Length: 362
Ligand SMILES: Cc1cc2nc3c(=O)[nH]c(=O)nc-3n(C[C@H](O)[C@H](O)[C@H](O)COP(=O)(O)OP(=O)(O)OC[C@H]3O[C@@H](n4cnc5c(N)ncnc54)[C@H](O)[C@@H]3O)c2cc1C
Image (cartoon, rainbow, N blue to C red):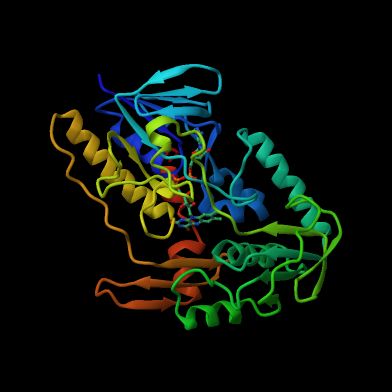
């Protein structure tokens, strides 16, 4: 039977593996002992009741295939080498290692019990803190602020960003920013100047500190969060695969999501150089394209499914009931949605029902 090796069990990798489980011998390689549902991670960070929906076991994802909890240290087009020294051969390889992001949005820890202990310590610190500093007023920073306000209402929050306003990196309408500022009334935003230096303590740890922006504003707080710096996880690519890495560490792909010049290797999700914003929804769409192409190849046909970048959109919850969104409707028109619709689309469930279904947790 055809051997398909999927490297990385995030949104893209887990879905590819599940979609091919009936036609191939699938090996999914993922160091973490549970899938991390990043879209719900910031709620799970402040509310322990949500942790169950953030850390989802892999045990019911595949029926025939295998999940191997190892890190791939070195990947070549036809084989991968794991942290324990084992080599696994692949007829087809799918790269799905995504991006790393600072705690508590994503985790370096492979063991759920360790990640959860770190979250518990952070929450104890938050309960004792008077003020926290959030560095970065992009979607993750703002979403974190929304969660902190809902669960720690007495907490005072300062948000610093070098840009002149929030959400500076996307093509967003001014009404979106206005809606965000109206709902985050009481948060101290410091725009237009970088921090002169980062706080000398780890993120999410209670420890009083003071920092200054380059323009001289002094900020004192007891905890801080770094909400910028999505980093492509592709340092393990070797040989012909390494040659297809861009300067940002992403992997060059064709519209079929085959890695350029390597017809038996595919890539999905944040690791690809597809010119679109990096989203779990895009990773899922990529997975559908790759699964269709691999099914065709396994059946001896040509891979014809292609991916076309999705229009820019954002669904930004601010706690369970707040938020704002910018979507593109069926006519191609841009629309701004308020708190109620944003809460209905994402804020209440944070897509956790979809994830529970994929991972067979119902
Ligand atoms: C706080 C937050 C909220 C978000 N909310 C949304 C949202 O609401 N909607 C949305 O569409 N997107 C959202 N995103 C973006 C979304 O999380 C990413 O786009 C998504 O995680 C990309 O999926 P992926 O499969 O490419 O990679 P990832 O989900 O990053 O998964 C990659 C996996 O690969 C593993 N891995 C890494 N290196 C190796 C290796 N060497 N060997 C083996 N395995 C490895 C990792 O452990 C990880 O499990 C959010 C992101 C954050 C941080």
